[in-house]
Length: 478
Ligand SMILES: Cc1cc2nc3c(=O)[nH]c(=O)nc-3n(C[C@H](O)[C@H](O)[C@H](O)COP(=O)(O)OP(=O)(O)OC[C@H]3O[C@@H](n4cnc5c(N)ncnc54)[C@H](O)[C@@H]3O)c2cc1C
Image (cartoon, rainbow, N blue to C red; front, side):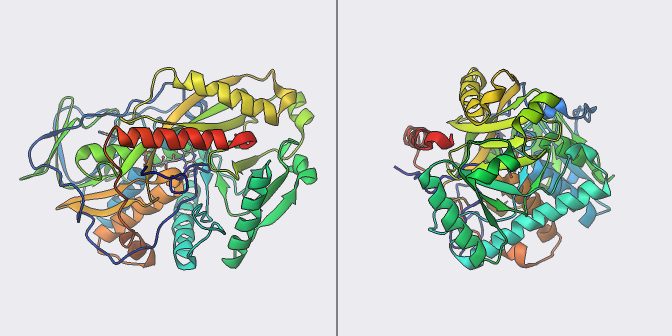
């Protein structure tokens, strides 16, 4: 069956990105299905569940008004997540005399970019390679890409004083409970050292001083990861866009025409665009590109209420930390700036990219189990929020970057690490459109195309089988 566990990237740190060997720069549209010239109705619009914890616990902001009637601009970007915010910002800076329209179906901070675990990870992690690094040249390019995304976000948080991002350079622990996990950590340490990256193994007896739990038996600490409150960060990014960006929130694009002119339809009118940038993750496939190459896999998070002082003291450990699992299907956890515990695990294939009723309740049970295993003394601490969010996964871990057809460009399919990769890709796409070239752009242009998947029902059966087996095999790491 098409999708193997070793290729399907998950985790978070939801998988730190496998990029297979890059080929020469080819036009992305080669071998991709052509989008029709006539009116194309968008048959799936974003609809996320109403309980994303980071969104509700970050600053309440006044969303920018939805577009009413018609508009036009030289540049239109669809998608107000990390990729789209970065692309719109950089286009506006590169073309200061042009108006840039950014359209988001929901509110900024409510979609997946505000629903993740908040790990801005620097180091590559190729789960198909024995040392989790694989080809060194590719690994260096991924490191550079991730660090570029980190640097852009760090500079923006400082420049615009986005305090709600709660950005901290805390590093991350990749932690294991089982022998199979130890083997992953040892091999990965070797791989990271061969790449010249600093890392440190911490043995189980020392871990409670770091993480406040005796659950883990070993961890690999890497210092370069930055942790954020993701919804607070993207809200702050939206509110600090350059003056020549016009952001329309709660404005889903419902249909598109590509010829003779790009026309985007929404509830009350149309937007005419000279050039269109798709930065809407797996929903980009509904615009006629990358069908059956980028598919929406959902993963789920829960946040406890803030721990009391007594509860904090009872567990001990540091005041702020983040753990990703050695097994990519395992559990991510964090102690947050406001002393909550975050648990992230479980996956589902939501074919249309929309949330499924009942799924947050279902996965909340798995979160409860994982939480109580790690913090048995906190079994009376309730979850205040449980939510899901869609990843744009590809079979080979690659992304769609560059030209999709005349005057249409894409920054799509960030797999599990879209905070940094989406930011870097969106920025680099805008730079490339302004005629700039650098090593990062060349690397992105050389990415292999996302691989095709078989049609349904085989795709759905294959993804579901892979996810169920992965979650089952994660054992105690879950
Ligand atoms: C629980 C969870 C934990 C995760 N943890 C991490 C982590 O710790 N670190 C990390 O790097 N990544 C993590 N991820 C993945 C990360 O959140 C994504 O890779 C990232 O959000 C991708 O950004 P993006 O801008 O490409 O897409 P998105 O964030 O999906 O943004 C696309 C936007 O397009 C909008 N849109 C779609 N269709 C339309 C339309 N027709 N009209 C208008 N707007 C439209 C959507 O509403 C959406 O807001 C996690 C994800 C989840 C769900």
